[in-house]
Length: 322
Image (cartoon, rainbow, N blue to C red; front, side, top):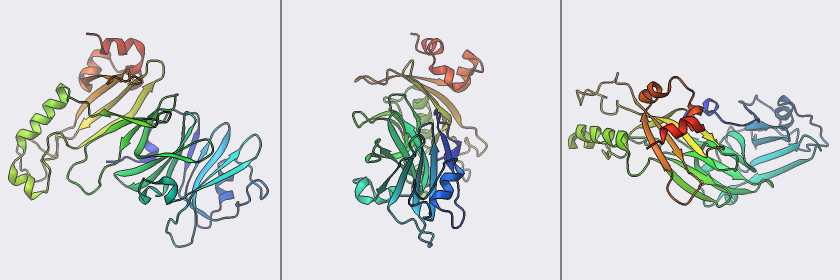
């Protein structure tokens, strides 16, 4: 399931401000609350009431993503993106409508969850439902370059974005999918789940497959596909520009079959299985290298180090040592 946006960790020097707008709040109010100097001359729309907005403040500019408040509670496109240059005071604005995001669905014009930078791109995350969102990738001129079905988890300095895929919300299982988007080539590389399944993932698949029964699957409209099970990222996603590596911890949910004691060997108190995944050589044409370790075993081997250290040269060399 998708976590709370503000709980995500993001390596950036920018300051993100996501707030629930007060009744009657204007564009100027929101910018001033973020520290911007706003006048009717610099921002002609300063008195316009807005809703569902996010503000990004960095050394160069204030960027605000918002809808005009129509007084109905509904989010009516277009979604506006405004940029106030901190040095020159120049204000630029773009309106994003359904035509601008095609072929992405119109649902991608949801509430503005966040605005972030990755390389030379601006990322606008919008909300679809608790398990789904979209990321609008904007160029410097605020034109939509691409739309990702999912939400950003981390970014490399060259602009490559690590993102988690959206999921259908009201379904029996929520499998995890992670890809890397490269804005330079506008290509996507799927990295998780690894294929073929490494040993710990394969062991988990075999375990749950042995527990499934046809009657249980039919009664719950469950796909009972051992490759698709409840899982989630625990904690941050860490990247290293120096090594080109990526690491995160995945929790395999062990309670999926325990809703009514249908399977005696699995109980609601069962703890998730936490597995560390470390990737390297993500920039080439060949599939990346991946190592899978029980997170408990990784802690025993390397001590109580931070996740960030798993993508640094010394630990990375030990992880991938033959």
